[in-house]
Length: 215
Ligand code: NHR
Ligand code: GAR
Image (cartoon, rainbow, N blue to C red; front, side):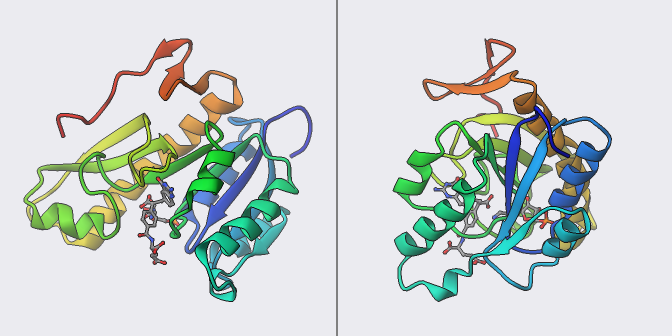
């Protein structure tokens, strides 16, 4: 889709089901966005196919081709900025990004993380939630800051952890919620309802209450 909508660049590393949910939401007119490009650090990412099938330019910047994290970050930044995005969306993107890169996109980059942050930052969140005996788990959409998985929250979704859950069954329950809340958060941004102001999330001019602090 083209026109007056916000320009989005989506970064992925793998399967791309969140990317698919975003493409579908846009198709249904819920974003009115211009999906300008999808970029993966991994040429084998299944999500690249969804992008191309939807007519979205898809590119690979392979981190393995760079000798330092900074060199990768710089190449990624150049590739992104050629598309002049209003918003950069991390949808299952698996590389930690450095200070210069983060500063360049402050207030313009969001991530979905598969846990009820601030619990379970980092990787393998579903297994760790089960092992910790958590009774609830979920996903968090947040603005990206230097502090990995520590940026201000936009929205969370909660699911129960069931007695027989495996990491896979729990991940599936969380993923269904991801596909709901990520397009929703993106739609708020596209409607000019969502922004980052002095480190706080503003939705409809109100400061978003910090969610999840009591874990
Ligand atoms: N970068 C910054 N600066 N801040 C954040 O909040 C970020 C970020 C980069 C990615 C996504 C995040 C997640 O939702 C994200 C948030 C990857 C790792 C990781 O340890 C951690 C958190 C996230 C993504 N990556 C390993 C690394 O060395 C590589 C793992 C792999 O390649 O499989 O970069 O969970
Ligand atoms: C999603 O569960 C997402 O929250 C998580 O990876 C999965 C990607 O699935 N993200 C991270 O763990 C970021 N480190 P998808 O490729 O099908 O959207």
